[in-house]
Image (cartoon, rainbow, N blue to C red; front, side, top):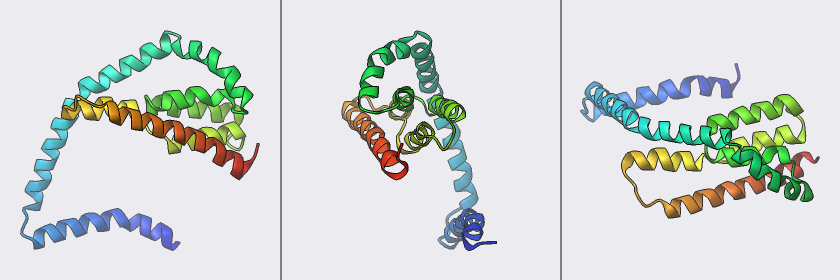
Length: 177
């Protein structure tokens, strides 16, 4: 067994044991603290459900309405003009909304074009380097009661756009076409 496998096997249990031992040494009631944390986790999960349902319904309406297909009619010629495969543009758009939907799209792209194709590599890189900005803002900001999220939205969308562009150039540079 290699050293990396050994570390990955024991890192999490060792960290948990360290935290428990350190808490006990500092005379913190570790079990009671764990139970309290579990209670808070359940309360947070229940408070997230309305925001999560709202976001999932919005995503379904966006995709089922044909709005994504309509937008792609305008974006496809521009994408092809700059050498960007139009097949990955919907992925870049959906990724900011839903990680699960984006993962499904990535899986479809890889199944269609192959994992070693330019599109497969670009889709994988986009999937790993962008964030579900709108999902995070809606669910987590809503759960803690943040009402003004305009600046976070601007920065998050800008970061997603830059991640998409940089993904394209990195895949192009590292793997070529």
